[in-house]
Image 1 (spheres, rainbow, N blue to C red):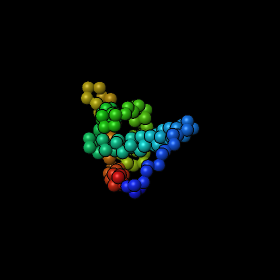
Image 2: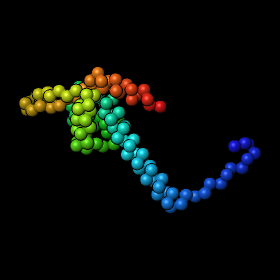
Image 3: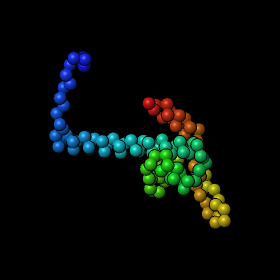
Image 4: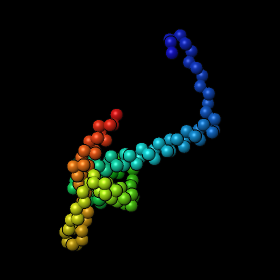
Length: 121
């Protein structure tokens, strides 16, 4: 726009346009949150691992401001472990004899995280 040109008036969006924009935004947020969840979990595990799953959720909430269900956390951690990105070690818990699962990045996980971070703008 040149200095002398008047701004072009913008038409108000129709209710249908607003509804469509809301749907597009909801879809984008859902995709973003899934991607950001993986990135955030990998960073937490890189910085604090080996780390039990129970210690990951509060760190995730602090880092993102989002809550993650136990089911969602374990499902994501299991998927990453199954793909070779995370290692899983069963560790005896003091006083109870129960086993907990500690997660750590594998060499593949470190390379994967590095590639993701390299793509970020």
